[in-house]
Image (cartoon, rainbow, N blue to C red; front, side):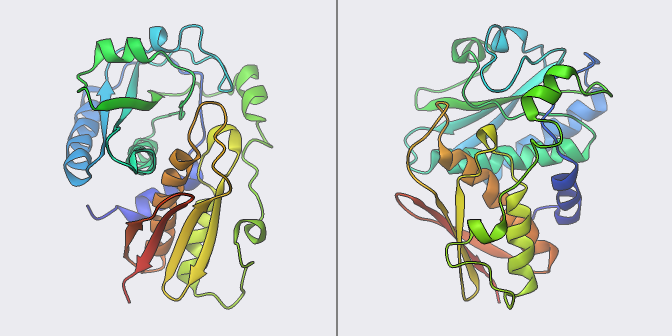
Length: 265
C-alpha cells in the first residue's frame, strides 16, 4: 500500500492521546470510509490486522485505569490483533495500528493507544479471533470532547506529556549535520511517535541509504512490549522519508535490532 504521505505527515503533528469523548456515534459515512480503509490495510500486511468494533468499549476498559487514565464516552473502539506465531508480531501490530491511528486522526477522530490495561476476554467476545491470534492493543475511537479533562491533563502531563528526547540521544552514533534531508525528516518524525508512558525506547543507526531501529534494552515495562512502540515509530520513519521524496522497504531483524529501512535510490 502506498502511504498517503502528506495526509499522514500532517496527522503526526495533530495526533494526541485522548481519553474523554463526547459519546457522539460515528457518522455512517465515516464508519464506511474507515471500514473500507481497514479492509485494504488488512489485505496489504501479514501477521497483524485491525478490527473496528462499533460499540461502546466501557466493558473493555471497566476498572482498567493503569497508566492511561479512565476512558469515557467513546462510542466505538478498534482492536489491534497479531498472529503470535509471527516472531515480529509486536512490531507489525505497532506499524499497522499506527497506520489506522493516523488515518483516523486525518478524519478528525480521536484515539489513544492502550496496550496493557484492558480486558482481553471482553474483546474476544466482541470480535472474531483465531487460535493463533491475540489482541495486542486497543484504542477508543470517536470524537473527543473539546476541552481536555483534568484527568487527561494529569495523565498525559498535558504540556509535558508530549516531550521528546533529543535526537542526539536517540542516535547511537550521534546526530550528524551532513545527513541528507530525508534522514533528518525521518528521525524527527520518529521522535513524535507515541509510546507506552512516553518511554521512547527506540534507538537509531544511520548508514548509507538506510536507518536501523533498535530497542534500548529488552526489559519490557507495564506489560507492554517495547517492540510494539518501535513498530509505531517505523511508520513514522517511513512517512518522514517519503515527505522528502524517498521511498523504501523494511527488513525485519532479530533480538534487540528491530528492523532496517532501506531507501530506494
